Length: 92
Image (cartoon, rainbow, N blue to C red; front, side, top):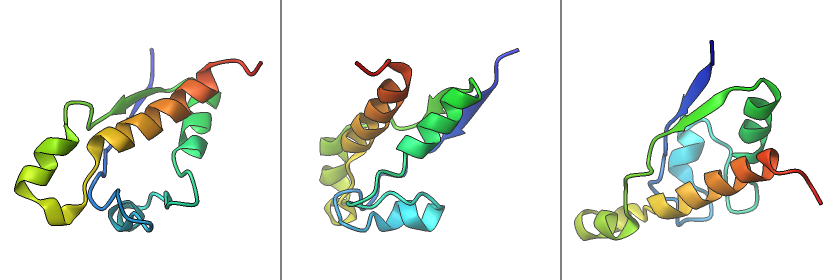
């Protein structure tokens, strides 16, 4: 049996220094701290797969309806993908 963890893509206010929506949801991911790297490392350590929401979203679509949200789903997906890749790839 394989375990997996669903991680919600909290992309509102991602383009701000504080990433307030993520902080409110419990993710300590601000402009000066990568909050997803420790999650990626924990999932790797326990051999848990990641089910990440947000892959289907586009940043440009968010700005058309709600520009004040400063959302960046593509930036968030890039960050989480980078962190997952880093723990799966051996260091050279």
